Image (cartoon, rainbow, N blue to C red):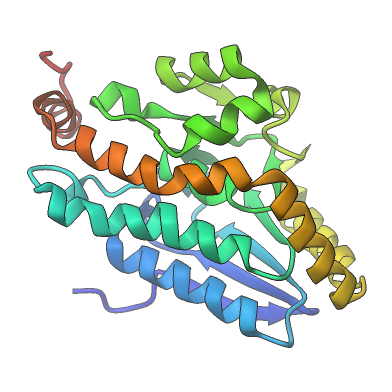
Length: 257
């Protein structure tokens, strides 16, 4: 039974800091996602906060993605609420956040961890951070990334990343335009807070109205695809190949497809 929060919330220098803290790898369970959603809602309504910073308390781990217990052996009716929260609800909260958000990626970001970071407005990465979309290796699909990733890195590079499942480092992520900036690991917290404070120093009215216009101009296709992505992921997760891939991962063996 959960004995402490998985997510911490604090306001420092007009910056709402949302810290992920579920050992060992910040795997996303339904309760943890509920806390993340609640923290972003709180930050949106918090008049003391003018910017939002998403970070991890786990060294060298931002988020490994979905807790596999959510998917293994579960019917679609149990999987869908999780996807609705991660894909639909969290994307909607970010869209209407009303203030800029920064993800400070301090280590491994995979699957759902990629979703958490990319939903933010800016991604700062430590130079030891790594990224990847491993869903295909489990017989799953990173459906929510099908819409926005090609617009960031280009169609062909997006396909290669999404369907190879390979891991890539922070330098490559920066070269692809997937992260805003790479900084030394030791400086990540300081640099992320400095950027958040820069955003927080601007006119809150100009930031709110300008960000809303920016979101309308850039996220229309993504928002239209979110519900379809949740439906597609849920369907694929229930297939025999996906269930075999998940079992193989848990049992530390190659999948038998």
